[in-house]
Every structure is written in structure tokens, then in C-alpha cells.
Length: 401
Image 1 (cartoon, one colour):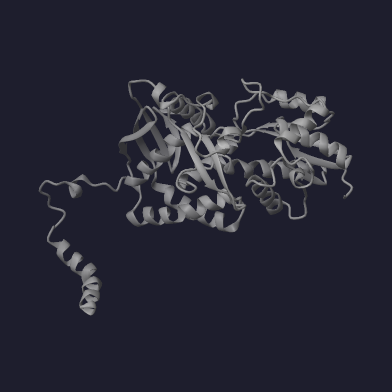
Image 2: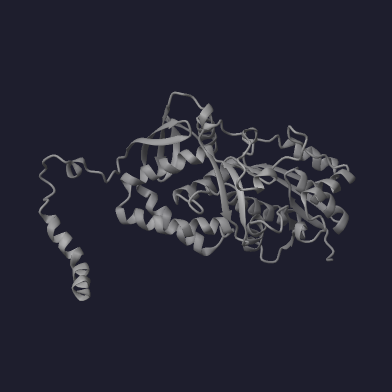
């Protein structure tokens, strides 16, 4: 085992990373520096700092990265209308590049030999973190405890924590909670009863939304303003990126919007069931698409839709820092120069309905689209257009006889 002097650990203060902190100290005999990113997870991060201090950590980094997270990662992703396998809004995946970037920067600043994370050897996050580490520092040493130690289950982790007097959080039933990941965009739930894809989630599990059945009986209407593809205001109130997403989270959650129960295809080869709450994102996606519907050319829209699954897969698989993601981002961002205007939405019991859209860059021309008499569009022109497009079909049919 290599001799290390300092390791920077991505630390949440939860069960896994708290056990890893002690394990690193015991196994490598090195100084552990903890890094906790505030991405809007809604937890009191001073508790993570206090826990690290109690475990003997001398250098502790707790940083508010909410604005950067939304502005530099979430919004660029939403410009692409990214959905993985048609349903997942990539709330966990999009947070990993920023954490990896800041972790590598801290490692450089403190002269650390290595970085460490708490992702398991079964999941996607190990890939996402480590692809980020190596893309930003090709020579960094990476420690992935789940691939090294003999603690191969949550039960084993709990036993280790109890033996080493590491506090464990409990849910209302006095059991260890679901495995969760949260940030300003979403919260995910995995494990326990959810490992059976036939079992419905328990309503008590949800923290960011009411059920659609419990949502208000009267619809709510809001307007979202866009500037060059990014949301900038809610009901004419200009907000910072993080404040805007936080406001939409509250509005959507109160109206039963944003829940998704998904069985997804992990990059490492297995199927996994996760339940997600992404309230604000579930409003932003249809709002952005509505804004694009009147400001982008038909072929732009269609090409974007063809590129989107590939873009979403790159983020899901951990290739945020890859040249192909940057290439796609440049193309997507070029299309967003005209995506400015306002979208009006009706929110009702889990549903998001687009009711209106307007833009000074609109390509919608009522004088052309009207069913009434007009002087712009000659309907007789359609005949030649149709006959030219039918030429190959007619030729094929004649050959077939």
C-alpha cells in the first residue's frame, strides 16, 4: 500500500463517508482533509463540520457552491433539454463534475497526494468522480474504499460505525434511512423496500413535494422569463440562478410536481431502481421547450432533439469534461441566442400545462398560420412541394409493381 501524507475526501457527514474517514486514518495513517460542498441539499452543514472535527480532522472545507452549480452546470444541461432514458433529469450526475473540480483544486492547494470518494463499486458515481479527477489532474492518486475494504454492505458499515462510535442517523422507524443524494435540483432515494421494483414508495419518504392527491384543488399559474435559453425570472421577479431554482422547487413541490419512479440502466451494466423528486426541474423542462418552440427553426429543434440523448448519456456516464460534451455544448449554446421571452404555465395536482408563450424573437407568424384568408401563403404552392417529396415514393412503388 503506497505511503500517503494527505488525502482530500469528498465528505457529506453521512454513514458512508464518516466510516471512510476513520478507515482512511487507520488504513493509510495519513492526514485526511474533508471537503463538503453546499449544493443546496438543505441540510445543516455545520453538523458535518462538527462531526469531522470530532474525528480529528484539522483542515475542513465547507463551501457554498449553489450559484455555480445552477449557473454553470444545471442551466447548461437544461439548454439541451437533457433527459436520460426519457425520464431522468440527471440530478445526481450533474453535481459530480463540480464536486470533482473543487476537490482537485483543494488537493492542489493543500499539497495532497490523493483524493477519495464514498461511491460504491456497483454504482455510476465512482465513474463520474474518477473521470472528473483524471480529466483535471491525470496524475492524481484516487482512493475508492468500497473497492478496497472488506465492508461490502450497509450492514457491515453500520457494524463498523458502532464499533468505532461513529454516530448513525436514523429514520422515523429507528432504521438506517434510505440511501439518498440531494442538491438544489433534486433528491434521490434508493435501497430498502425500493430494491423491489414492484413495491410502491412509502408516502412518508418524500421530502420535497406533496402527493398530487394532496395538492391544492385550484390550479396555480406562473410566468417564467428566459434570456438566451436560461430562466431569469418568475412572475417578473428577477432572481439569481440558485434563488430561481429554489423558488420553483417550493412552488412545484406544493403542487405535487416533480416525482419520478425509475428503473434505469447504469453505466456499469446493471439495472437500478431509484425514486426522485425534481420539482423545479420538472417545471423548467417543459417551459424551456415551449420557449424554444417559437424561437427556434424546425431543423434546429429536430437536430437538438437528435443530439439530446447522446448529450444526456455523456452526463449520466460521467463525461462532463470530455471534448465531445464540450463540442455538443457549443452547438447547443449557439441555438440559444434567440431563446428569450416568457412562458405561462398552469400547475395542477402534479401536472404542468403550457398555456402561453411569447417572444420578440418569435418565428410564429399569425398572418401565415391563420386559417382565415391571407395574402402571404399561396396554398397552390403546396402541390409542387408534395409531388417533389412523393417522387421517390412513387418511383419505389412502380419498381415494386
